Length: 283
Image 1 (cartoon, rainbow, N blue to C red):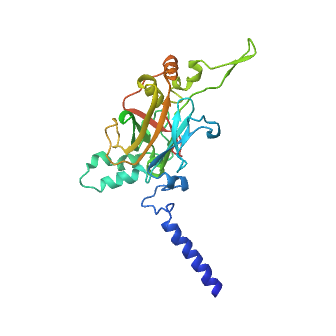
Image 2 (image 1 turned 180 degrees about the horizontal axis):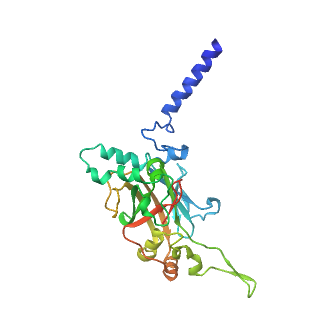
Image 3 (image 1 turned 30 degrees about the vertical axis):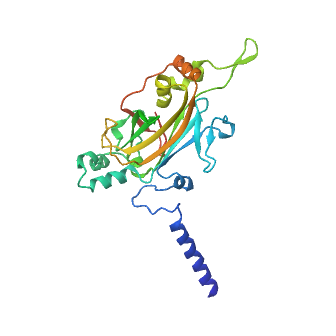
């Protein structure tokens, strides 16, 4: 009997600790909620990560207290992850229940009933989009550019973490067969990703190429629920779903190389499409 009571109290204590843990999340909707400890740590925030951090240059830095990456350089690739508290559908339902909000802006029900839940929005197929978010990027405190993320049924109703590649540069030395030596990549080789619009699109790179100055810049990301069939990045609510910031270093020589490489220009009200069911998207 004593053994049974002891087991009961251990289980009860475990449940109580879980409910008061920062990683516990009682979902108010049918979305994925907080998916793991990292999600809980970065809840309603962006997480920025370098590629192969063990080889990253010294300019890529962490906060000494939190261990979070806070500084990046244009010579090294890095990615972005957005950790939301709820799916977009949660916000739509919330706004539909609010009499002060215009119903037509947030009423997804007709679209939702028509679309295939297994369809992903890719290759520019906006016809299967049901949910919309607006990402806003600020450089040194001023809005630099923004884009619209289009999602199919599954993503808009379930996904609470989205990710993408932010910076792509190839610093790999090339082999010279003529004299059996290595050489540095040309601007075209180094920034080849900027020119492959069909495969990837790097708006932060384009902005820094066309508008950036040498030195250190504060880069901020914000994301908001967007209206149904959103066509402009201003078609959004004022409720901030997620935000993040990092310091970014770039030299004039790198800006000049990017200009030589060329590539597309930034597109106003650019639309981005989810590729897979895990929240990853490319520009």
